[in-house]
Length: 133
Image (tube, rainbow, N blue to C red; front, side, top):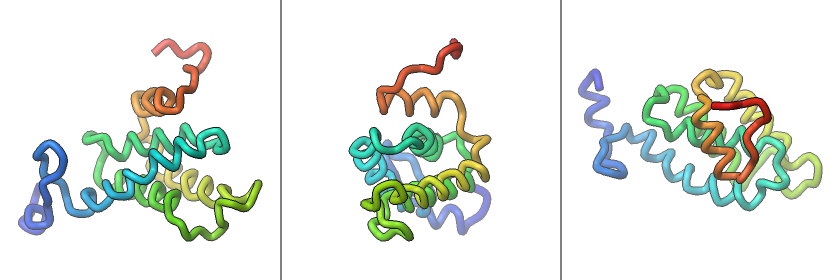
């Protein structure tokens, strides 16, 4: 932490680690992502991207600005009020996919293979053929 404002705006998170308040608030959003993602995983073609973004956002090595973008995309996914309600068959998740695609376009270089592996494990997806990592 570089200045007094950053130090003052911290809270003690899980494991006694001090986090910026904005990241601590985003942890509440994160608690809603996994249950909804698992409930809808079979219907979402972008479920692995969302889970990868979630794991990237929780990674301590990911820069704070990238975390903010990824948590914002995750927050939009779990928000009950959408531009297109999720119950509309065929279109309901298109706005969620667009927000996630935009977020990954901005900070996708921070989503590493380790995040994708964790996402595939969470969703019980097979490893890609030819990928021996």
